[in-house]
Image 1 (cartoon, helix red, strand yellow):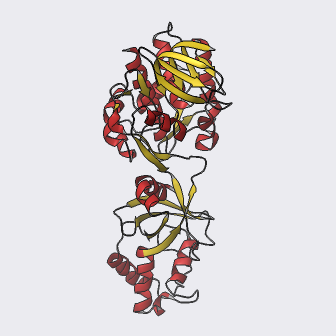
Image 2 (cartoon, helix red, strand yellow):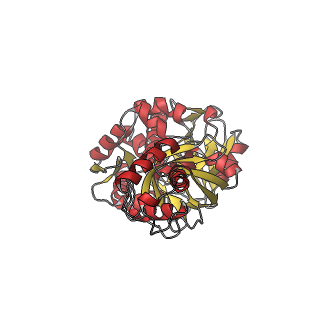
Image 3 (tube, helix red, strand yellow):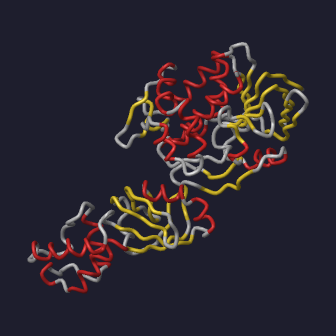
Length: 404
């Protein structure tokens, strides 16, 4: 059975819905369908941000916003000047959804529920007459003279313009490769580090502001580090995982990291601070209370790692012990053996080569009337609402390109 549409969008996620809604709101006469392979749509929206949906980030300057994208920084500059975080907030407000800013800049619906975003999209597609067809796994895509043919297990669809918004779907990438597109192979981009080390074994839940460096690379990061049951997480680690996605994949997730628990204080400065503490707190026990801005439990563990027992007083610290403690504080090395997915946020680096996409329209440079939105292209971001912002921006630009 053949079905004809003006525009077919493959992928019932954030980018697919946003593209469809923006098209039909501006031209209600167009016949548009969203094809989703699963039984449910917007599944990633549902689980994002622990079920609250981290819609975007309160970074309103396009030239600053692009810095959160390890892949896509250069290409997104133009699109973000057309549709960035402020436009996202305004768009959702127009559709009855108010967003709020949290202390770290992440933005959520004021309801703290992803269902609010899902309901917003569902209401819009119902009102606009956009067909949402689930259980439609695409088997083939063909380019005919003046239209596209999309074959699913159930039926054949014809359309004038085709939007691919399938995220990190290897089967679709393979089809697009068959149509002449270059695909950058996918590797995980947001993940935590698996570390078994007695210095942190009993410290799950402890966090500190640190600087981290991957040994024998140029990869560095600063920010909060969170100790977990399986190793290390938190923004400092996640930033490294995103920027180092390819390098760390090549290392098969076996590598060493240097952690400076004092962040921007180097070894010499740390030694100086410790010498002053030795005089100031001469009669006090070294391990008793952290003199730095991180928890006592972590301080006690690092003091032990420096070979200083729980009874030692500051006055009794030898020069060797003091230097050892300064080294542990600023140059701790940990061995990473593997990775774990960060919460439910499985993000990949990889996809359609950015050189093959026109970022003024999100149209393929290889095939006319073929458009892309979201993570199907080789763009990804760190955690914090940036991957969704890429979906909204790509959907908005693609809709403009289709309607032009």
